[in-house]
Image (cartoon, rainbow, N blue to C red; front, side, top):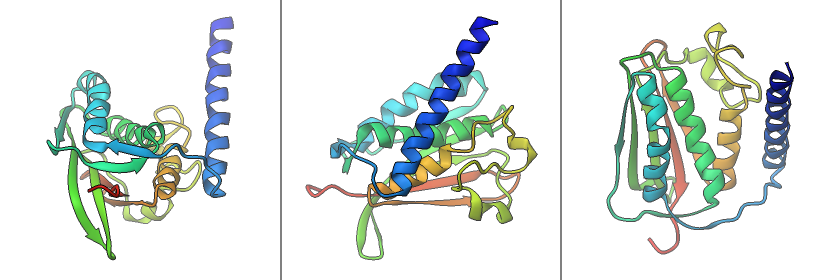
Length: 193
């Protein structure tokens, strides 16, 4: 019984930390330790870190890497959390036999700014169109299939959204119920690219 209580205390502690960080990000007061980061190399490590979980869930995980360094000014810890959140969701909501792809594009122009784009695409259960506007809200979960028993706290996408915004970027999502989801993260390129 003490072990279960200990686990719950740890879980609650992590929830409180997530809420604190999210509150700072929403208020525009999140401190970032931005340095030049080779996003291509970081993504390769992140994909490698979640590969075992994907394999345990009988999912194919593919990473289409850009071989040369792609530099963004970023807080490596915060950006890592963004992609861990997106990949964890993709793994959680893609049935066995499905596929998750991480695709990186360099030098994508959007409204006179040049970005590096990273898409996390899955063949999972998808998200109904009427739910898309609320995806990045605190504690929001899509339908009953994404309950606390099968999912998280409903903070992961909100945190990812605010972390990316704090870096001067944005996230777009395209999804069709029962046909998969694609989250695309746009991050401004570093000055030396």
